[in-house]
Length: 341
Image 1 (cartoon, rainbow, N blue to C red):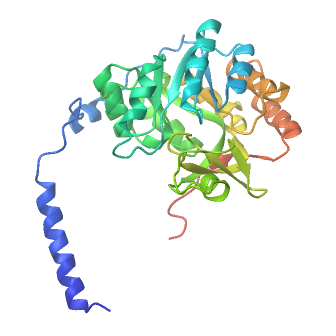
Image 2 (cartoon, rainbow, N blue to C red; image 1 turned 60 degrees about the vertical axis):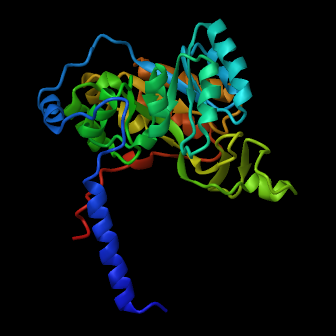
Image 3 (cartoon, rainbow, N blue to C red; image 1 turned 180 degrees about the vertical axis):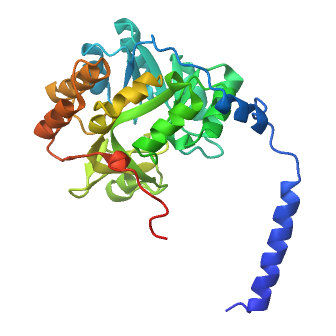
């Protein structure tokens, strides 16, 4: 109901304000950004990865029972992403007893006033963090906490990877948007494959939301200080997962597992990644029960990264004992973005 002339004037005013804001000084950062010239030189003359470094398989666990199963299976690198932050103390004690390296995953979305969560994580004194936003990364910089960057920081090109490494990341996770050819191109362009982590088994996260379904349905209170149940099945194709107990922010994820061994491990696909230096791989557990099935999944990927099992065999066995289904995710086929033209 507003006249077009008024909207046009508002738009012009906003553009003028944006232009003025672009000329102001940027927010302070713990380290200066990488100059474009330096990044270009690094990409044109990539460093050679250490081809003698053995592959590393990390397992992201969402419950203490899953953590126990992973440690019993001999996993020496674990990531914990629990609903109840109080359980991290037990998780770290168990990992240290087993001689395993343990990292804590941060929230994907961090809002003003939630810095206390970082302080609580720091008190646990884990071996490092898997950061999922820039606020967590800056906190690690300021407090000397080793950190790796998750897929949510969107590493799809060498510029982003180099920037995050320059800010102190020990490794970065390749973005889920990449198909297999783009992933190989990214690693080849960087030449630092041993600092890229590839997720080979997961439930794909679709979106996050502030509204807590658990509390709205199961609580008469207006507060958001409780969360019930780690996972609730909504349909045959979707799940709702509460990402963090303390903030009660759910994540909608696909129920169907994404697994990439056929494309990342078959002779025509996986050797190029190994030859380019990729050594970091991750599987993420969600609904997988802490039973022999979970141990079997971990065992399949352990054999896979060590070259003791081929990708086709892993795919066939996953299909055999998976009740929900398996998909290849974004690595199904390379997509031509210009095909519609």
